[in-house]
Length: 146
Image (cartoon, rainbow, N blue to C red; front, top):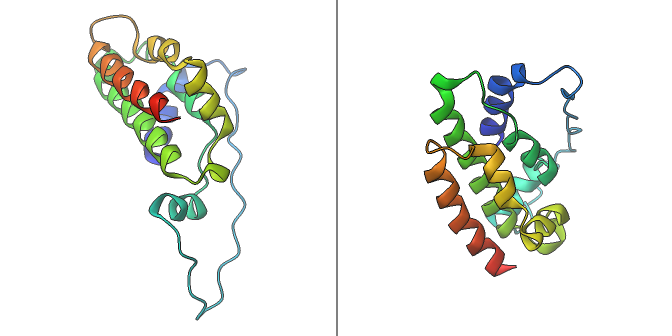
């Protein structure tokens, strides 16, 4: 997820104006567990969340909405990165315990605002149609679980 986000930001950031570019806040380093202390029992998603901060849903949506205009040669790769970013983020959110899930993500799913984001992220043309349709099905599944 972090790799997709980083690549998309680097590839597409030259399309943004200086006003829209924002410095990302870096997570503060966490204290390490003393030697010999056993790690707490967690599922995989919780372990990932404890080791690597998960970006807020608003940050994921911001990256998805970044324009790929001017990157026609890379458009399919950009679409694939956006697809992977959203699927990974959504699956990770679904696996986290409720107290660690992003409330903004739950709100986005219940309000049904992701299809509009997909139109911006993948355009309305035929190049992004496969991604929009696949994500539409995945989002419908996620929404049915919440």
